[in-house]
Image (cartoon, rainbow, N blue to C red):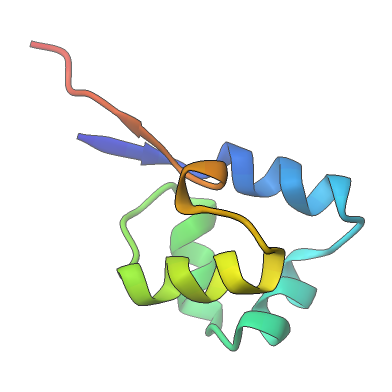
Length: 69
């Protein structure tokens, strides 16, 4: 299963926030931000921090993409 954070980037655009703003507000590191940019897995703790900052739910920022058989 893969993940996509395209919804997260759309929310940032809608809220007129830059990735660096999210990083500072959610207190996440540059390596974590890089993982998000590459659609790699991050911890649930990171997703919760982001949701608190953006006042949203996890489903609002991440999509799960099933593996093709």
